[in-house]
Length: 112
Length: 112
Image 1: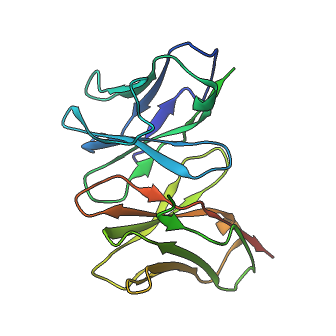
Image 2: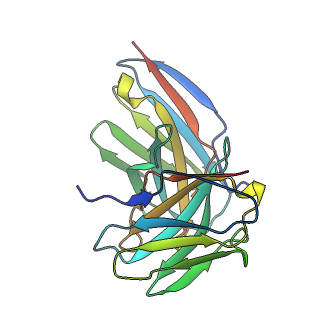
Image 3: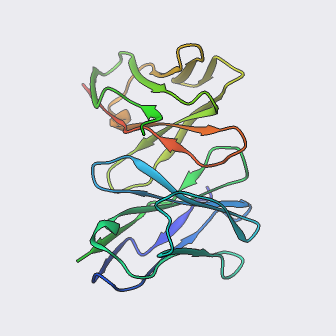
């Protein structure tokens, strides 16, 4: 069964450093997303990406965040200068449009 | 701004009985609703969805009911099994958007 894969599963970084979280969406999907879940809180939408551009973003997704689809398979989330409050589980998701989104297993980001 | 609310943080049900998980929403622009199940350290797994043009959708042991006038939906699991023990998230999206707004989740525990 096709699945969304994310790497790494856990990333520890120092405050102020840049991190790149990687995702391989399901191959025939056209819409890609990043969500995050701070410990004990709900899953929150960050950004959606379609046709090589951002289609929607939340107020969380400020200038420190960027997304890219560098090739035909990968979808990345970059945080330029991490803050302590960026510590969370980051989930990548994909779908074919207005259908259920399939989520990856997540990357736990710990900023120290 | 809690557009999607799950007022019960936890629910405990005996194996074989019915589990009923509830979700309320405030945004009348929501037209697509989903239920996800989540185990610790994993991404959300899609369970079942319903469009606002329907009031019921069934898939095996899982049934989702939508009451648009009350802005309420519920997930019924019959019969409940110990493997159903997880956190269940209700999610919704507005017309013409793909982003999902999640509730805070309900932890279901099914005991023998």
